[in-house]
Image (cartoon, rainbow, N blue to C red; front, top):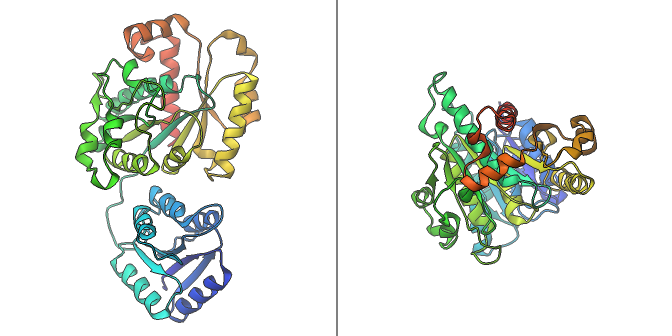
Amino acid sequence: MPKKILVVDDDLQTVKLVGLVLDRRGYEIVAARDGKQALEKAASEDPDLVILDVMMPHMSGYEVSRRLRSDPETADLPILMFTAKTEVQDKVAGFEAGADDFLTKPIHPQELVSRVEALLLRSSRGQPSKKPRSEKIIGFMGCKGGVGTTTLAVNAAIALVGEVSAAEGQEAPTQEDQRVILAEMRSGMATASYQLDLPERDGLGSILEKPVGQIEAAYIDAQLDEHQSGLLVLGSRIDPLGIGEPVSPDHAELIVRHLGAASGHLLIDLGVGLGEVNRRVLSRCRHVIVTIEANNLALTLAERLLAEMNESLHIPRHRISLVLVKRNRSAASLTKEMIEEQLGHDMIGMIPPAPELAYQAVKQHAPMVTLRLESLVARQYKAFVKELLEAL
């Protein structure tokens, strides 16, 4: 059976030339004209190798490569990038995005064939091997500030630790599978460590101080604090935004890539907005939770956010879920069905108002889910986590 090669380029002449050269060598060719098509065909056609142009509209080859690497089904797919640029930094960016090899335009047929054959020879695709552990990375994002995204992520993380512990007797998990990590991806206004009564230590900031190329996995692990529940936390500054070192997309991707591989579940507090850091991290998330409130402003903002995530970032609808955080009982007229119909996404959690419990949680630096184990709020958090595990 001939090897199948996916050729991705917005230039039709390049696609024809590459296709003709490889077709004569007996390869089966599948073509895509942009990044969205490339991701769709990588999933549906199961190619043995991807030849990927860097400069494309809407989604660059770097971004396509990152998304292929973040999906367990395509994570080991050999990627040969080609571009008209010859600068070293462009090739470095390609390798950091996950490319296996680089080819500069104009393409010489013999060099193209030799590089394709070498990559296929080195590839383990199609060979019996242990299936890689699927990373369960979950992003938490608010439709706007102040909707309780961090509080949701903290309580969900604690509840998830309990679910993982309860499941230990049912199977034999690896050490990584047992680890639940909560990471804050903001260099300011970060309150997870405060809510969990952990030391006020800027673990994220310590990582940001080092150049990406000098950061080792052990150094990232050293910045984690352990909660008494067993939850591991990468905390950040509680100071206003703008005081600490800003998070760079490359730092964020490095942190997520390592922590995702080193844990059974990685929960990331992304705050709000679709800046470059959040766009990079969202591309690696298995599932995204959007925190909403039941009022017209919040729902309008959520509607715009979800549309951008679907249309611009190409995140499938089934990988995004809503959680409604109620602060008072006046929003009871908006039902779950009404909100789902307006926003076009499923709601997998609804946290009821509990002002007294919330006050005690802040005062005692303890998550609500641990204060009153049989309270309605605790039960709803645990129900949400069960729904989330089903969605992963």
